[in-house]
Image 1 (cartoon, helix red, strand yellow):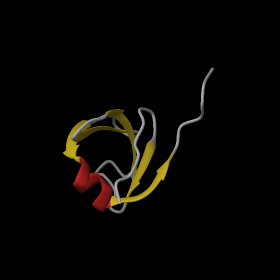
Image 2 (cartoon, helix red, strand yellow):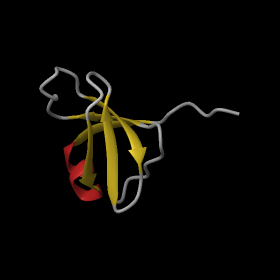
Image 3 (spheres, one colour):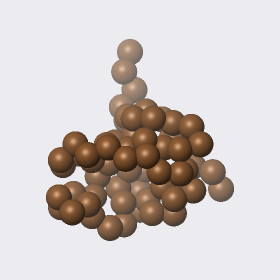
Image 4 (tube, one colour):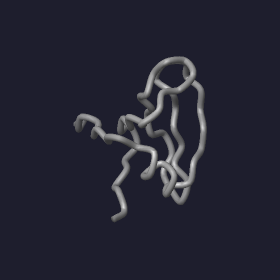
Length: 65
């Protein structure tokens, strides 16, 4: 099943980043998903299938008016 991602969502990965945090913020959507580490600010782009496989939880960002 294909997960729905929106910009600003928080993705919690199964394994932590070397900086110690497991939380990433979605900042690009398409066939590839752009993620930014919430701990150190490192950016990476991963194929959507890998993000879905490695994610433990996806938290939606609050709706802003």
